[in-house]
Amino acid sequence: MIIDGHAHISRQDYSSPERLLDDMKSAGIDKAVLVPGGMLDVRRMTRYITGEEKPILTDPPNDTVLDIIREYPDKFYGICCINPNDGAPAALASLEKAYRDGFKGLKLSPLVHQISLMGDVVKELAALCGDYGIPFYTHLVIQATANTAALGSLAEAFPGTNFVIGHMGFGPLDIDAIELAARRENVYLETSTGNPLAIQTAVKLAGPDKLMFGSEFPLSDPFVEKVKIDRLSISDADKETILHHTISRLLGL
Image (cartoon, rainbow, N blue to C red; front, side):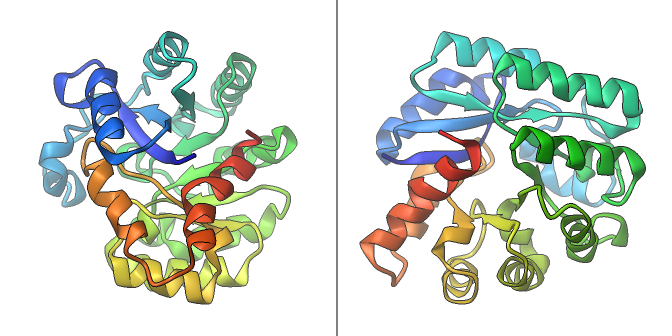
């Protein structure tokens, strides 16, 4: 069993469920964890990172993910995305509804929503994730409001919540993310777009049980991302942990 732990989905041609299923088949991937896509045009990612362009929308299309999961219940799980800028009552109600609907975790997007990981609403969401026993996934940015240190402080404040750092920390943050995952029992790493050397280092320092495979579809290709894991100089058992066991444990599958 191989599970893609992080794939963006929408009704756009380049990120449709049909295209993802085709890519999964080519890569030998059995199931995928979906997160809402469409808030950014990933083909223009550089301009979002530099601030030259703003997100297409800030209201995460969780309903689209839910509809697709219901269309393909044997292939997909879902993680909801929530905008903390909506305020605590709305954000918490959204997470409560998503949990009732069967979503398996929460994703925050500092790049889209320009949030601080130490904001009050984020803290309340982190606490609720711990209560529900679902993971809190976020990517990081270089700015101090949502960098590795900020995530580390949040993870320390909520030891009962499991935190997943997307994309191996994303570029220049990867070594800090790896060291944080090695230090803190409740911090994990998702591998998509990470360079193979960083992933190999993470296995050595943090252990394979702290890594989960993801593709970052459609920005990256599931086949390419899986090859990174296939070519690691680790045992087949450790590869299986990264490709299946870690995400299964985090999502309670």
